Length: 224
Image 1 (cartoon, rainbow, N blue to C red):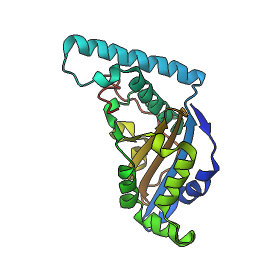
Image 2 (cartoon, rainbow, N blue to C red; image 1 turned 90 degrees about the horizontal axis):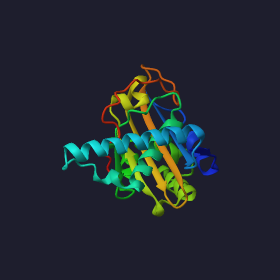
Image 3 (cartoon, rainbow, N blue to C red; image 1 turned 60 degrees about the horizontal axis):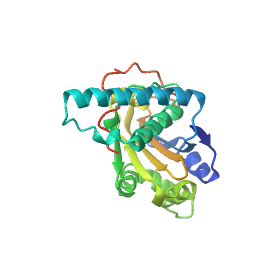
Image 4 (cartoon, one colour; image 1 turned 120 degrees about the vertical axis):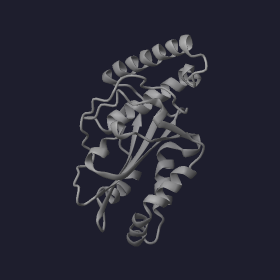
């Protein structure tokens, strides 16, 4: 995966870099990546592919009703691998090798993303409007994402990690959420991560701590 610089994200990322809201601080970031593998990506991709196929083989032999049929599709496996690789580039110091596939959910449309922005970034939206001539934060984000990746052509995924798969949990996050927009045709992924911390806990955005998560049953039950 290769990080891609896009100016449509600049003003949004600057605004969300460290937004002070009373006792809390919100931090968010939009990033774009090409799906072109680096040498490290290729090694990890092969490893993940083998792990998935190994699990599928065991599941087929021991539990015919196991809900992993979707991962028998090469396209689904590639999508899962791209998402895991993207997480790795978002937090290069964090180990996502044990991320389980069931933590990713495919969203049918943009509605889920919009609801998360409306719910968790309502105060931020008011600040954005006050400093940007009344414009909508959600509309500005949607326009920027669409300009970079063409939302109508994308599969949209959310990532709902447990405590072992979320780097910001160790920083005392009150809440966090992650979205991925994957355009197969453009071979490009746009990620949006956002979290909120209490000013009493202190944290450092975009720096992850290594995790030794369990390896068993990684990459199963992915909703793709």
